[in-house]
Image (cartoon, rainbow, N blue to C red):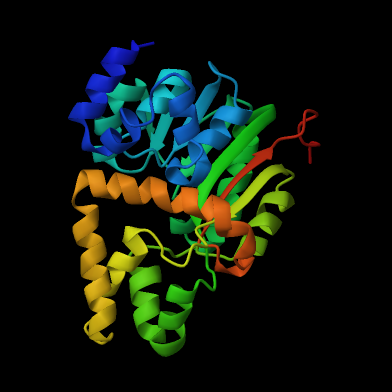
Length: 284
């Protein structure tokens, strides 16, 4: 396993790992506290449920995550050849393929993790993908995932209600959210595979969303000028690293305080952990 300094150097060189690398891949209480809010608590959920040194599969890994490489024995799974090459130095073992036909033996991993992948899978492929996750998990192993939700957040509901075709283009077709679902549908699919939900958090219900969904508004000429202007402003803020990081951290912190008083149906993102039973699954 590489040293912490070597991992940080990779994080500086690789734009895919930079914002998720040196910023969160530190030891100590301050870094652990930050991980509660960065990426909507995704890192914190992994840290709380998956013991350090565990064998972990990161599917749809992109360029990889320095913090994962620093803490776990990680294998990457990617369908993109460019991402496989980008992640090779960080994870060491990166396999080309897709999670619906995972090229691994049954019960190979202590944990399987993914962020912003499930909602990009074709709708009919999602149950197959989660069944594959269950197959390659060891008994007692954990699946941790972060994904976007179909929801009634005021910003998104306004676009969907007044500009349905624009909504479909900006929030389904353009980001490739072909498998977008509501929270209840995700829970049903996960439980149907036999996995047991142990942690479930619906987030991003703060009235002001982060820069990506707001930035999408800049792409639609049919929207009012104020909506397009807010989208351009969001993209401008996102292009300035320090402002982008402040936005990324501040919004979840504020939401942690006022979130309990905001409607659950506004939640735009879901982060969850589901465990494979210790007894495994009965053979068919």
